[in-house]
Image (cartoon, rainbow, N blue to C red):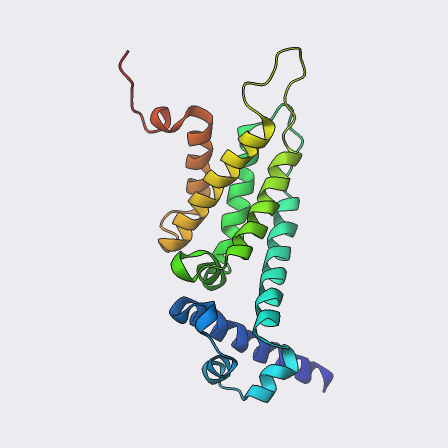
Length: 201
């Protein structure tokens, strides 16, 4: 009997979240009411309040659970290369895209265009930055770094998120492995060389 109850609760929560993601894409977070969510999920308002206190509680729960899953996946990416290797970028990117591919409606709702949730992107960027920073171990020596560590990380994370958003916005047009490989080549060789463009002297 307990298992049936748990399954029913799980299905109700899934319906609520599915409705929530769809409505964010259609109306934006601020334009959604609890009644909108209840109507789309085909439940009554009281059922909604059995699971979530209010709309911000639903948003925070969705963000925390998905970002926790992403963080757990990214944490497992091997970082044991010294000095920093481009393979780290490729591995972290592919892991992230594969996670997104199983949660596309959520990431569409959180990241795309005017309906995006800014705090979600900031939290996601923090996860990626922490992982890349973990793998950043430049060769030791007397020569100063050409650019600051913080500037490099900001550049990499900004580029990383730009690729992720492009991929989601365009309905995953390339396999995760191919996007990851191309991204790592762009960073390693520069965008012109990676594209096969030769600059004239």
